[in-house]
Length: 434
Image (cartoon, rainbow, N blue to C red; front, side):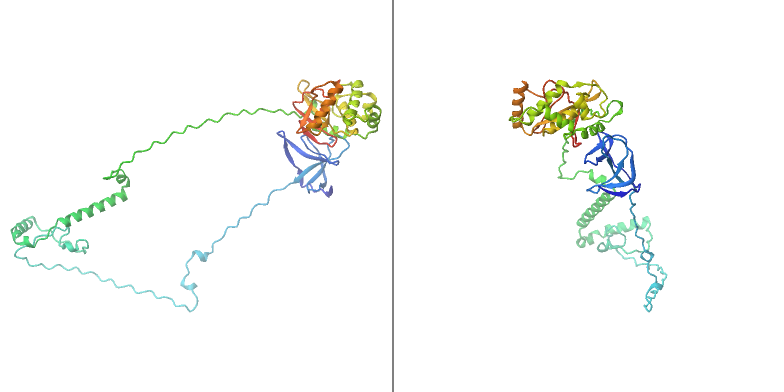
């Protein structure tokens, strides 16, 4: 791990573990875990690992001879984004004036406005009265022939004839009806055309200004559509799922942290300790058997269980292996550390299980050995245990096809322990939940 000078610009990185805030710690022996307790650290030096992660040295006494480091992350605010608004040039908003035109360009002269001549109204000359008044043409416009009824030039209003003059004109028209009948054209097509045009114009005007009135009127030959009732969709109620709370206690009585205890246990498992190797040499009698390591570990299990005296105490740190071998007494933690060390001295993988006891509101400990890497070897181990101890179903755990055997304090291996909530740790400081 490389060392840099600390700058105080870093802080411990916070993770989530079991709904609590935790810190990522590593040891100088290669262990890695999430720590939920409070820690103190020194920012005098900044360390980094092979992946480039940064760490501070933890000054809190976590336990054991190892040094621990906490992963940190830089402290700082993100650089604010810079937004530049595009400014519009005044020249884009103001039209170019004649002064801004290129020199020498011709300036257009303003076109002269035509002189406004006053309109002189002329009085119409009185037309001579014919002997027989012509029959008036029904065009809707006075004084305009029917061929120009749609283009009527503006004319000054004529004087309205009196009632007597209108009556005389009507009498004259009736008198001349017989003479003009052969030359009279039929007005029915013209009247019908005018009516159709008037209806079209009126309908268009109504459609523009009152569209709701037209849309509500039925048309001839058009079938009235029958509205299709839409089906009523009844939502299917979703089932209410009540989550089952899974308690996972991690705190020992008195505020001790189970993770801290497990990390204290891990370095205490030592297969090369002189007290362990000497005890193995004096108490492992099985040699040359087909079951080899398992038979030797069973010898050691029998020797320890016959002499071990359980002493209830505060399981916060295990005693030395030398003391356990000499006195053959101690807590469940002391017994578990000794048995795990003896099993690893015989070449078998071992681990210690921390089990939460709800009645005692505390954790108890017992060792396990990796009795078989697959189902076939496990069946062979069951045959051996049946022949030696007359047991049918020894207790343990199965991690996939890997089988672990309980070596709790008992007359035989495979003693039952209620492991509803439990954690395991091995000599490599690897912590798992079971």
